[in-house]
Length: 243
Image (cartoon, rainbow, N blue to C red):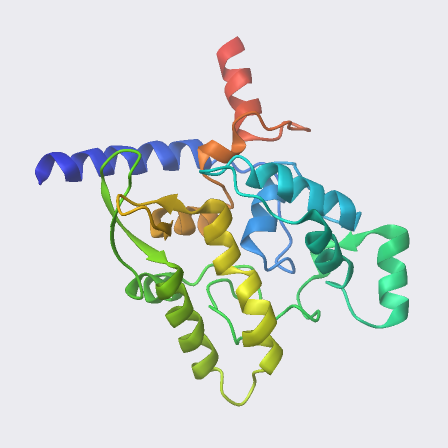
């Protein structure tokens, strides 16, 4: 209906206005959209961070999602510890200096084109790939406001990942589909997903688009965020309120 369309348009406008504040530059060599958003608002450093700190930050942010999702900080810490490389000297460097978030591209967790291809190697968002991802979704009804939107549930995310792996024939690894992909969009749905009227969790394509294009999480995640160096959406709002 027209009223539903206008409500959705207003909601998207509010989302955009809250999330277009660029706080920090993020290296194109950090290909993870979730980590990029955390760097952007000052939750993580653009360079080196201790793996345990990365795990703790993600755990804390995840709890702000619908239903307070629980993630394993130990698993996240381990993943961060091997993100720059699997050679002993690379892991030793991480343990001493931290994970280099600006040097994740090309590491063992980089699928090198076997994934969604939404973010290219220059850190630029490929809109056609976002549209392609959206084509795997279907109309969902947000249980929090009754509005319709395009989203992907876990079944649709699985089909999307299978298609990504299939098109990468010739330059894909078994580990890409078996281990790395399940740690990405399925986990993002667990953390950032909305709940539909049918009770099923789904990734909102509006929010996924904002995550990639603006390096911003939904406002429910940034609320109460501790920000530094002019960082964070809340920090900007507080300054505006004092004027």
